[in-house]
Length: 412
Image (cartoon, rainbow, N blue to C red; front, top):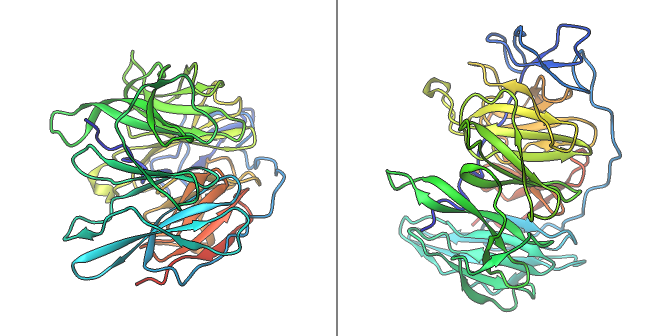
């Protein structure tokens, strides 16, 4: 029985204050008071190696963004877009009337100057069921569509020729795999639902194999308890998984240097309460771990941010650079944070887009923006940022600094 394989992809991050002791190079958690992007420092210091005291992370090499063509004539509105490392991609769109939504698949072939419509195996959606299909890009011309049906089991469809042919499959695991091959996707599979039957108490990691689209159990599971979820992959091939420490029940990460064959648990210094799946992003040698979770009801956000952690040694150790304080923005985050090559960190929240230039110690509104500002996700091609409310406006960036915009769908 499977609950929420994709659950938790739309959650959290946020902001704070600078260190006050000249001898302590680092930043402190946000104080209890202060407006957006700041607060008073606490006596306890989460010391770091490169940030604080007004110093920014050193600038890094930047790169031109990929040139993705627009396709405003595609039918409907896009709800899922993904890319392979070769700049090929897939998009799922839906054109909805009063009682029926017709689903479409568009494909961008490697090196092509335009998108093309492919045959869609996804059925029409009727009534008030909503659009629930999922898209996983597994490499050049390869993708898996997941029905998103409730309750499971879910049907799947796999292509290895750019959507010209689709092979029917299942999201149930079949066999094991010793590692996560290049191009594969790491996903979580609920092995024990909660007492209410609408959540998960424990899960395991599965691998979507890029050659077949088949789900297999990862033979060597991370040494964590609770709900195991993928937490991210760096450009150097480090894999991260999120769960809880078996001894303390507090949030923890596990890292793998050999494509998931072996894992090593790492503590998150300063973690105080369980949250949702942690997400790790990288800018060069600097890693950030975003810890989302439930905030007090009075904050009025759904995708709350509990803490932000930073590592300068490849994820062996972490230090907390920020934690939630009442009323201090950003209090929420949507998608993944963007750790850019200039040393900045950007968070898309429910009440605005927030940017930090000091390693996540403090945040300011980006370009004065307030209100929903879309979200960002990490793809093999780079950061993909989408606008709010399915408008079909996207931006993509290899380095988080230089962006290229493109439009998909006619919005009908």
